[in-house]
Image 1: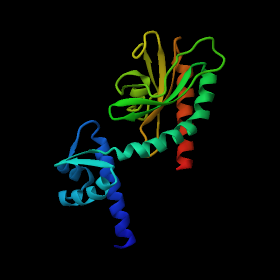
Image 2: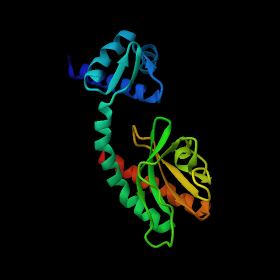
Image 3: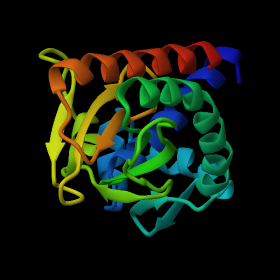
Image 4: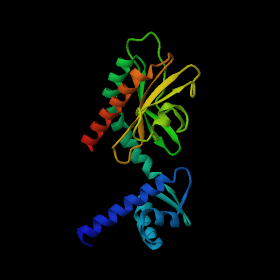
Length: 213
């Protein structure tokens, strides 16, 4: 196999893994995966072999899901992502006076992977790392599907916790990452003031992650 052939095989294998992930909580069929990556069913079967051997996918007949081997990889990635986000979230939390957080998409849910609380406020929202909620509820989840253009941020009020307000913006331009940076407060947030700060924080984190990649 030439280096070019090996590169194409690797690219297709990664595209296949991404297609399985894009299926979310549903198992993808071989036919669906073939269409998604523009390959034959036979090629998909061949590509699945090494992925299955490494536990990255699990196949049940013609249906394919993500494998538990990805949990080990994710366990290595999340601490690095948390470390990169820490300084950005700290600056945002102190400026806004609200709890700042980084959330990533896992299937149909938003998972909080990093949280920083402001040091100078009398009270603030206690937002736990590991908290999950639907991508369709709350600013953090909705921001991940926000299309370019407009203000660049999403607001929410009382959707996840009574009396809590949130503002979040998507982290754009980092391949393979669907995430958002946001703040949440028990007091109303002035979106016109806070929104641009959240967008700037999300952009700074994206720059850091692209540099480290």
